[in-house]
Image (tube, rainbow, N blue to C red; front, side, top):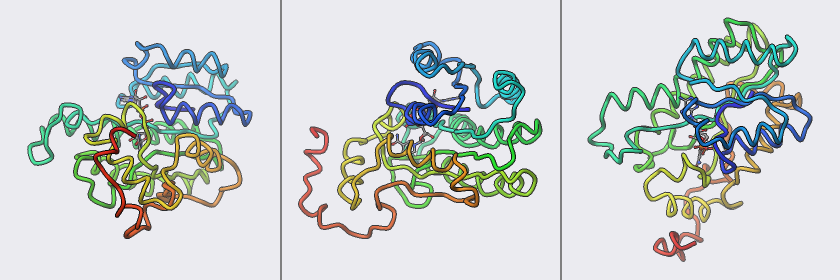
Length: 265
Ligand code: NAI
């Protein structure tokens, strides 16, 4: 079950393609408003996967979503779920971090983080996950370090990562289900590019990382390893998938860097 494929740039899109290539039977979901663009139906057709619209902040819609999904899987439980959802109203509306609108912040936290808890709580109550299944959410290093333009999404990601640990305990004890987050490099997507100064941000991380930025495709590879039986004992972790960025202090590559050229790159 894959949440969050909006268009071919979406990280979830690449993950769905790789999962299908490994033989997974999938269902795809996104918010009803995202269906308007129609791109996800193309992916569904390409992968032979049914598309089920659901707003991840609405518990009732999630219940219907997982019930329908299990029906499509012939009554079988779900082996893996990807949460690849993020949206900040304050970022979108260009509000400064020192002048945030709190109603918008509540919405941002609900969509980007609390939806992860809601998703897991519905799966848990419905007993919809297979034993030794795997749940993955996508995060960003702004949960640990300060990236001023990332704004309230930093708090959303900190909350998301905490939910992975806390729910990971309950799902682990009852069903041996793993819950992890992947902390991904900046990636050119609709959500990513919405962050102010994204081009500079992207180039800076690329220069700082010994391996360069991790692409959406390599994120998909990593994610498949977490869905697979080869990582059965990995749970409650925030796993950096960032070409080494998170452990760098200073890189000589930055000294020769011209940030002004980043936009043109
Ligand atoms: P994207 O814009 O392709 O995906 C975000 C998805 O969230 C979209 O499909 C959107 O329709 C969905 N969404 C928004 N509100 C929703 C709702 N109420 N219910 C259900 N779905 C909803 O962008 P991207 O970059 O693929 O984002 C996926 C995840 O990766 C997000 O959690 C993002 O924060 C995370 N991430 C992205 C990075 C980047 O630089 N692009 C870096 C690190 C993490």
